[in-house]
Length: 285
Image (cartoon, rainbow, N blue to C red; front, side, top):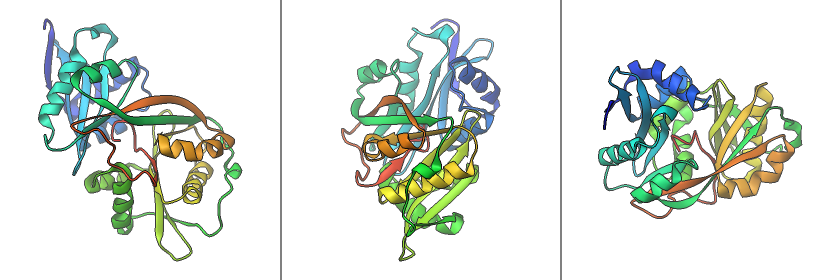
């Protein structure tokens, strides 16, 4: 292929990746979030012969599932098959014994289907510029507390039910990155949910968030809405969206997108469908 070179990407490439993200209007990917992506995963990409990064894609390997995300190709180099080559590279780099999942954009879905990915569900995105936290009527029996490292075992167990895999190392790093960290306890002092809120240039990303029931999920969301004055974004599995849609709309959220959740080397999601679960981001799953 003329004038492009494929290689692994590193933290030295962050300035180019920030520029690439701005080009395709992905405002959540600033230098801090890209640092988080690169330190949690393995990235491949293409550069020009002059060294400018013009595409990227990342693999995040967990215990029993891997996730592919942050797949970007510059508009100046589309139609050359770069996305297909990056995905093929990451699949070879992944553990061949576990499923690999991704959330597909409209442009990416046909590419992933040709590779062998199948739709296993849907990811719903909700955004809000102004919110009404008081519209979320929550039980007074749910008590919220700041989360710290001592709560990680309980957080890991809940996250594993939602993500379908153990992500202990990722959760440690994500907790460090989060501006807001909460746990919920019931009247028996059992931890029934947790939530992280991560600031990006565009919004506060709510996630990962996991809760055993609707009231716990809404209590965690209400606390984050009350604590932050900017815009919000949440990405959730379809089962969670169906259960919370009316409450989220009443609180000021609008559903802005529904994307295909796709998997290869398996045909089912690995998570517990009874758990209300919000993604850390579409890249991390």
